[in-house]
Image (cartoon, helix red, strand yellow):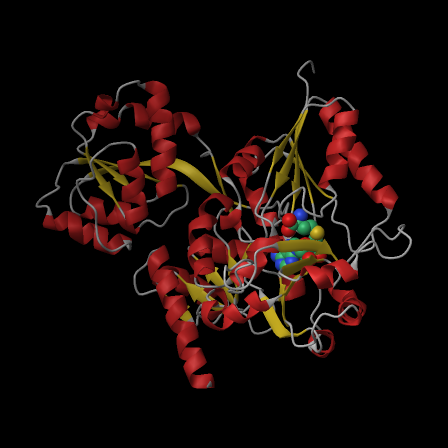
Length: 509
Ligand code: SAH
C-alpha cells in the first residue's frame, strides 16, 4: 500500500456518547483501525465502518510499562501498514491518560498524527454531579492532580504542602483506592477537616453515583459504600453547590439498565431518548440490514416505479434501499412520475421527506390493518397498481388487504433482516455480567433473533414491546410482556417505559 498511515489521538469524552465531539465521530467513521481503552465508551464504536479493525487494549489499574510499549508499537505498526488509525481514549487524550507518551512515540517514529481533544471527566464528572469547578464566590483557580502516580517514582511527587496552601478547587483523577492516605496527607498539611469533598463514579453514564462528605470522613465513607474506581474526586467549597445544582441524578430512569436490540444504525434514537431520561443503555443489536436475495428483481421494480399509481413504503429501511437504487438508475427525482406515495409511520414518512418527496398518505397507525382502512377512505383503489416496498418475509396482511380492495399489488423486496452475529463491543458479555432491568423489542425479528442468541436471561429482566404484533411474538416464545407501547413508534415506546418505571417507583415507595 503506498498511502501513508496516520494516527488520530482521539478523546472519547467521559462516557455519555452525546459528549463526543463531531471531529471524534468523524474520525471513528473514517478509521481503518481503532484501538480503544477501558474508559472509552464502546458504544462510539458503533459509528465505525463494518470492516474497521477494532482492538481493545484496556488496561486495568497497575498496568505495566511494557503494556504501554506494546500499545505504542501497535499504533506504529498499523500506521506503517498505511492505515488511518484512531487511538480512542476516555475523556481528553492529554489529561492523565498517557496520551502524551503515545504522541511522543508516534512523533518519534515519524508518523503523521492529529490530536482530537475530548471533554475530560475532570470537568464533566463534577458538572454531571451538579458541581461547577469554578464559581466566582468560591474560588479563582482549579488544580487537577493524579492520585495514582507512576509507581517507578520514589516518594510522592505531589506537593501536599503546596496543595494545602493553594486552596481553590482541587480535582483528583485516579487513586480513589488510595483516598485514605491522600486525605490524611492533606489533613497533615493543614487542610481543614470539614472541607467539602465529592466523589463521582462512572460520571455521565447511566451508572453515575456520587458520594459526598468532608476531607475528614470521605475516605471512610468510600470504604463503607464500596465506592470503587473509576471516580473523580472534587475537593473544595464548590461541592456545596450540588445541593441546588444536582440535575443529572434526578432524572426518572437513573440507575435503570435497558437493553436496545435494534440494528446498530437505528438503535441510537431509542438509546439517546432513554439515556436522556437517565437510563443506562446496553446496545445489543440483533438485526442487521442486508440486501434482498434478488437484488436485480428489486432494481427492476424500482426502475418501473413511475408506472404505479401508488408506492407504499412500510419502513425507513425500505425507503433508504429504494432511493439508493433509484438514484443510481436516474439522476432526476421527477422520474418517479405520477406515482403517489404512502408511508407507514412517522419515521418512514420522514425518510421520504428527506429525499424531498411529498408523502400523499400517511396512515396514523402503524399496523397493516389500519393502512388498509386508510386506503379505503381514499375511495376505490380497484384496479390501481400499487408497488409495496418492504422487507423480505414481512407479514402478508398488507398485500392481501390491498388486493382484497381490488388493487393490483406488486411486492418489491428491498432488504432482508439478517441476524446480527457480530458483537465487536462485547455487549453480550456486558449483559451477562451486569444484568438489566428491561429489554426493548421493536419488531418480531428482534425478539426471535435475541432468543436465538441463546444468552442466559438476566435475573429480573422485564420485557417492553413496541406493539401488539411484537408482543404476540414475545408471548409465543414464552416471554411475559410487561410494557407495551400505546403508540407503536419509538416515542410511544419511550413514553410507555417512562410510565412503567414511574408506576413501579410509586408502588415501591
Ligand atoms: N483522559 C481521561 C482521564 C484518564 S485517567 C479524562 O480526561 O477524563 C483515568 C481516570 O479518569 C479514572 O481513574 C477516573 O479518575 C477518571 N475518569 C475517567 N472517566 C471517568 C468517569 N466516567 N467517571 C469518573 N471518573 C472518570
